[in-house]
Length: 90
Image 1 (tube, rainbow, N blue to C red):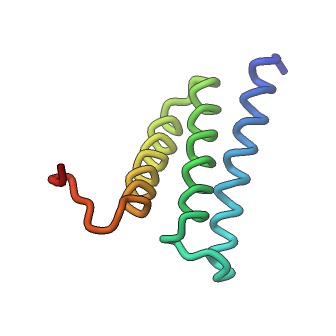
Image 2: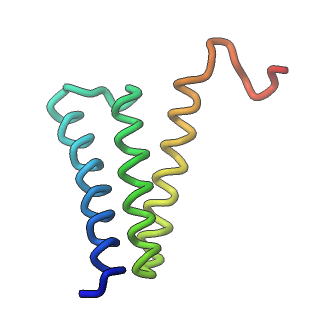
């Protein structure tokens, strides 16, 4: 295995591990799907899995995990936005 592949593997395993951790904690009703910790685990996990897929040039998962990370980032931003904040707010 090449060093580049080894790094991609470690990054990928870390990302997938974070995604699975969020999933299991949600199923166990420890984390709610709309909670900040759940969203943060999903964002970090999807971002790492996307980066790993990019490193090995596997575009289907780059698209999947990139979209997952982007959607989670939007949900997290909405969750962290001040009350009453909208896109139209000055």
